[in-house]
Length: 103
Image (tube, rainbow, N blue to C red; front, side, top):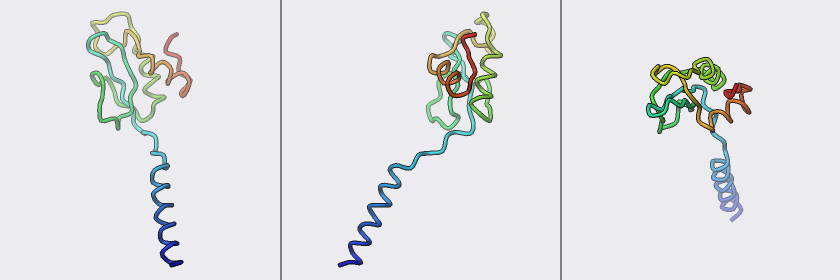
């Protein structure tokens, strides 16, 4: 009976641990450009659903944010430039990486 209860407690602990364990953040990030409006976004490379055309891959989100900032241009015809940024990308780059895409 005691062995059974110990085994049950161990099984519950394993399930709880598996459910609450956080996944490691992505170590690779993509800079992608919406082909319709030229807005760029920074996305984890591991995302199964990627939005926009790939502009460049980077080893970190900060590198992708810095590249996005460097590629800002008003000319929408240049497919390697960003005419705007998605709201989420602006927020994440500023708060998490210190890269302000609004300046």
